[in-house]
Image (tube, one colour):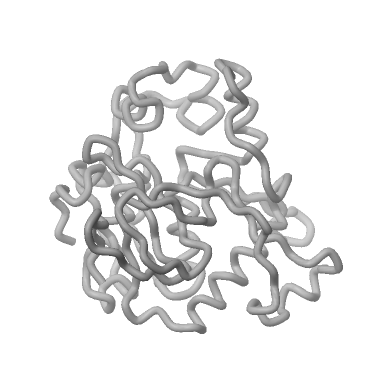
Length: 266
């Protein structure tokens, strides 16, 4: 199903696990995943989501949960009583996404949730600057680059911690089940790169500098430009026929930071 902007006039019924995005001046600034079936959604309506905010908004398992219970039917796991909300401005979904796909993503999300420091946390502390912001992002396991990272126990080989960007979270969620590979490998030489000015405009709206402490905290210690997986790339990856979304990685172009006006056709 092609991705598209929502309308102020025409409401849509959106199913859980729909990709929801925010834009600013045509640039996609954030992507998340719809947590519940939601009727009558118009442009800029607030909807409940799972996302790497930061922090990660996690699926809260039952208090009695243990490692063996992760394989219980996902439909029996409760959502958190309160989930974060974002404004729905652009959306995308797989038209042939079925119940098995959704259950698989929910199972993945629960496993990931247990690898993060806390299940729910507020966003940036009011007035936080410099080192305080960097520490918050490090504690939340937020990364700008790479889009996700996994730490494994050297003895058992089990995952012990994950890190994500907002785009990395959505990509990994879909690649956990319904999609073979959503985006091309960001380590490729031809993957588009973005500079510091673009990152500041996207994430700080030009009001704050990406200082050295923040750069190190989110994985941007190397010289710019960086092959960051931008939120807009995710929307463009979904703007293709279902069969291609499921089986063929999308090769973004530098203009794909914008949606719907991008430029990629892969």
